[in-house]
Length: 277
Image 1 (cartoon, rainbow, N blue to C red):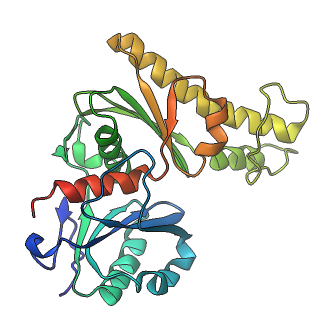
Image 2: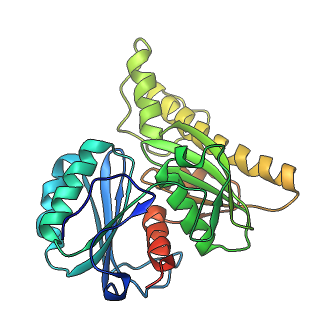
């Protein structure tokens, strides 16, 4: 069965849904890494998801996934890709080679999907990773107003209402990108992009002062989003934080929060389960 490269909202090729009761391969192709998980279609999305198998690789190591994936008989593949057309082409070729009989679904943002309404002015322009993260967040915490902070190459901070509406959000440079930009573009400052250890607000050396500034700029944006939502709605809000940089930020958050690793993968599972068999 041939895979297709035609962009669609949730396009698929392959066997009918009646034949797809087996293993799911969920892929989150981010700006720097490919994160993936094997899951059963019947798995219940939970805050502490235990996947059948889960891992991630940087883009240059994508070919290694061919060996990793061969142990599973995948029948359905769901992909969120923000890494661009070149990575998409490589993933298409890899999936077609390893799982030639699998259905392959490439998600794009739309006005409504899997219980979430997208209130973006132009719904298709919302980054699919943000859209899928919001779907996962709402599925995990229905009837709860949420601020969803995903902290990777970029940091996104989005609002999801208890009624299941993605209201919008903000995008800022990620923790390491922020530190690296400051170090590269400011004379005589050290390069600290790779050092994101914990720091006090008032650091007594330049390296830690940069780290402190970057960490607290990130947590400050998240805190502002939570406080603004509560002021606008009069309702309490829970912050869900995900992404590779989340562990560096969690100790500095003072708002009510929960760390949910791999929220995009959870959202992909929810979308897969929302499709009729």
